[in-house]
Image 1 (spheres, rainbow, N blue to C red):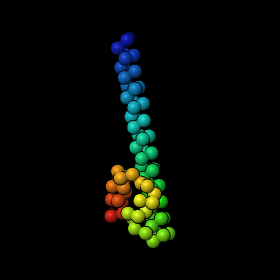
Image 2: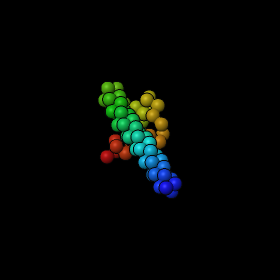
Image 3: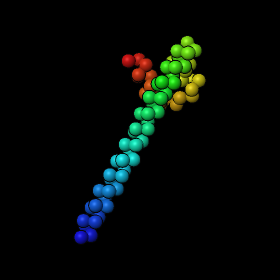
Image 4: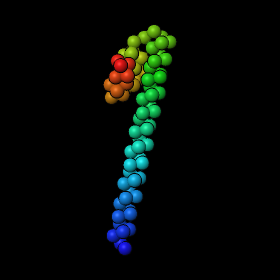
Length: 73
């Protein structure tokens, strides 16, 4: 009986951990989509380069590397 409870507890913890990881991934994706939209709007409105737009928006270096792929595609 105790082993069953332990197994259930471990399973529940892993499900919760997976759920949290999924939420974090979703939030990252949503932020990236929003940043792409903001960068595009800024580039078009001010007729500036990608580099200048991310500098003005203070986008993190890691995020810039991910987003840059979108603009190069």
